[in-house]
Image (cartoon, rainbow, N blue to C red; front, top):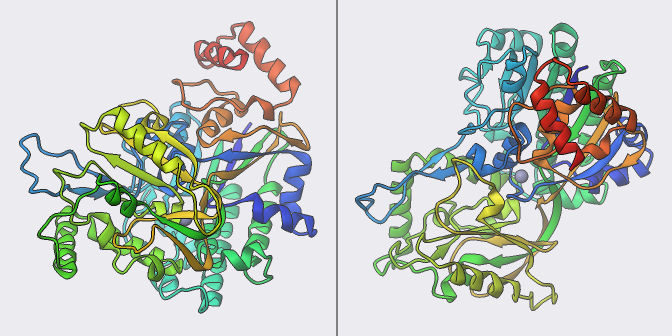
Length: 528
Ligand SMILES: [Zn+2]
C-alpha cells in the first residue's frame, strides 16, 4: 500500500468549500464525499518554513530547528558581538528525520517533489527535487544530480517557484493577470512532472508540494475570496491535477491533501514593536538618531551576517504581495533595528509575522517569567478602538515549540491575533492600530486535510488535527512501524473500524514483521 501526500501552500476551505458548493472542483468534491476532511491546525507559527518541516517530520520546531526563514547564530560567550547579532538563512531543517528518511531506512521508495526547505537535496531511496528556498534552477537541486537533466527534458521550462520578475511589481491594482498566468504555467508543468513520475518511476510515497495559493492569495485575497472567475482559475487547474493523481491510485493506496496553514483577509494592523517600545521593553540606541545612518548600518550588518540575500527575497515576496509599500519603507529596518541590545528586554525581530499574521516576541534571556506573563496579560487587554475587537486570539510560551535539541534559550511569546488583524513590526507609527485601505491576504491557523483511499472512512468530517500528525498518520496508513516517538499522533479518526481492528490484531499477535516493538508503541498510542 502506497501513499501520496499532496501538499498545497496556503490552501484553505474558505476557498474550496464555496467553489465545491458552486459545482466546481469535482475531484476535491470526490475527496470529501468518498474520504475524510478535517481542519489541519498550524499554529507554531503559521509560517511556511516551520510548518512544512513539521509536516515532513512529525515534529515541532524545537526538534527540527526551523522557526523562520532565518535564525540567529549563537552569540560568542565573550560578548564580542559589538551590539549586533548575526543571523543566517535557513534552507533545510537542522535535525530530525523526515518521512523520506524513514522510508529509505525501511527500503521504501519516495518521490519528494518541491517540498519547501529541502535545499540542498538529500540522498534518498528515490528522487528528490528541492523546493522553496532553493536559490535558483542553476544550482544542483535534484537527487540524484542526473535527474535534473531528465526533468528538463520531460518538462522544459520547469520552475521551482515563481521568479522575481514574475512576482516583482505586483500590487493589488495592477498586473494581477501576469502573476496569475505565471502561476498557472508553473502549476501545469508541475502536474506534468508528477504525472510522468507516478507512471514511470517506482514509488511507495509520492510527496509533492504546490505553492500557488500562497503566491496568489497574498495579493489577490479579495478577488479570490469573492470567487472572481479568473483569480480562482488556479483551483480548477489544481483540481485537474488532483484528478490525474487519483487516476494513478490503486484501491489500497492512500492520498492525503494537506496545507501548511490557512488564509484570511486582514485590514487591521497592530504595531507590536511600537507597543513594546511604549512599554519601555524595547530601547533604541541613542546614536541611532538619523534614520538613514541606521539603515546603512543595518545593511552593513545584514551583509556581514549573510542575511542580505534573504532580505532581498523577502522584500520581493512582500512587494509582490502588495504589502510592502503600506507597512515598510525599507525591509531591512525592522529585521535588526538600531536596538540597544543591553537595555532591550523584548522585541519582534522577524518580518515574517506580517504576512504570517503572528508575532514572535523574543525576550532577553534574564527576563523573569512574571515579567513575560505581564506582557502577555497586557497584550490580551488590547482592543482595537475602531472595531472593538480584541487583539489576541491565543498566546503561547516557548514550550509550544516543543522539546528537543533546538529548543530556544530565551523566553518567547508567540501571539496569534484575532481574525482580520496582523502585526506590523516597523517603529515610529503614530498609532498602534491602523486600518489598511485594502484587504490583504495573510496566513491563518486553519489549514486543510483530506484523506482518501484504502482503510479511510468515507464522507466523514474528522475532528481537528495538527500539522505534525501527518507523518505518524501516513506511516500508519502504510502499515509501517514508528522509528521513534513523534510530537504528532496518528489521526485515528480517519480510519475505518476494520482498518483499526486489523492493526490491533496484528499488534496483539506480535507479528515479527517490521519492528513489532514499535508497533506495540503504536498500539499504546492508539489505545490512549
Ligand atoms: Zn505566505
